[in-house]
Length: 389
Image (cartoon, rainbow, N blue to C red):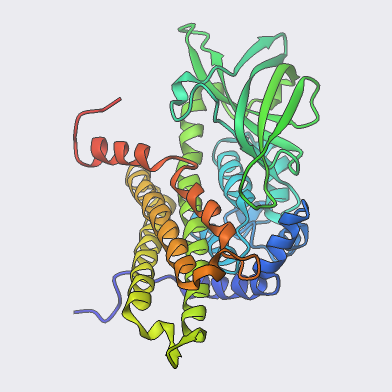
């Protein structure tokens, strides 16, 4: 029997994790929350992560990136979140948008966009969700129509991140198929200063530098090359971004869970009642131990999903990515709840910085895909049960 473990990350990725963790610790949760409460962005941290090449680890080397895979980028996302600095735009810009452009963009689009993604100087938002469509992408009503050599975009999106910091966004719309006359998905790169485009901020309870917006497209005219890749690859392009999105969302959640658990453990070791740390009591220790197990399980599934995706096994990666996203969402909610409970009343004070994590963690059960839709997917595709919707 081999002494080699069934799964272990490469030395290169372990070194990457350590380097990112060291960088994140120089900023930390206090920096993140101070910026968020002041209505400011974490620009210094983003610039530092980009300057060190961490935002571009999954970009091909020919475009200035590290030539790695989604697993490397997920590791960066997780370690920053574990340091108390969960960067939501990492899930969107380098993971979804850059991945789709890398796989499906024209040569000119790759040359134009990818070096900026690699350096961290280019950010791009991603918009698919619509108020009347929800998780049903087939009901998307945002449409793009030809007008000579241009495209005209009409419709709207909601719960879209990063519009106040990204100069461009990748829009999932529907266009008419020239052969069938039916509408099919297509992706367009839209400048956020385009005439006819407006954004309205959604007031949220989450304390984060990243804001959410409702978008409106009213006869937004776009040049011919605003269409990403080929007209016939719209559905494939869309799915190409969903697996990385779920893998990154899982890493985002497990990193946040690790941060919450570390704070809970530290408090359990330092808070003394009846002449001993409260962590000596099983009622405190066991829930924290359970969270550690759940977090590690979610991390392993996330790493498996990333390995399958990087190996090109799209179908298996899709199943694993959904499982990882589900497991991570459950793990972070329970970890944060247990850490708050460990702190007692202090868990809801500003000083200890736990209360804001409750709302932030809860989002991981909802976005970018709800736990219920993941269970539908697993029931149908993994277990072979009848489709329920």
